[in-house]
Image (cartoon, rainbow, N blue to C red; front, side, top):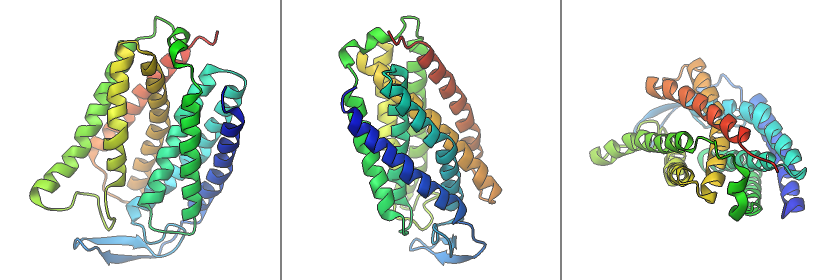
Length: 287
């Protein structure tokens, strides 16, 4: 694999730094001390006054701690295992590595631009940068021209591609349904709280939605890039789906109101993503 040493160095750096930030996020964010803060939009928000995530809302801290737990127990082990397999020349390992790096890139972009400033800011920036460059280098290491030959002809591309198109469209409509009414009414979107903008919705609408739809179309047509993009988006969707379920549980536990539609649809979608992941890995021919 091209860039093997550089990718290994970057991935190991991500593992070490993510381990540190996750442990700090889990164990140094507890605080019963909250105060009410009136945002510039006139909304009164309860925010934490202590801990690494201080000045963030109760909802955001619940989500952040849940994601830190998923990163610690799932993301880091998967990154380590996939790096080991990819260094052994396994295509499955490289697919898992690329998708997992996508999860870390998405996660730490959101940490850099969403969280209130805290002492880990520069660490988040390093994690974001290392995830970005290792993700790009890993994508470049694939032999796109011959990639189709490594996938079994029995792979149900219509099911996988159709699901990706549905998922991308549903996610897009979900977030547009939150933002467009606010634009029409001249109000702020629900869930903005005291933050400056909708970072997660921006990432999803700008990257996840178009990549999911385009990769779905390409894999249905059995285009080489479709196999790669679909594999990456499915692996990333698996890790992120588990994180979202953990966030929903954490918010409910913290007493935060959660949309019934979102709490019902994300676990179902995650189960389908897991099934798609099994299909993809099962139909990769290492030879």
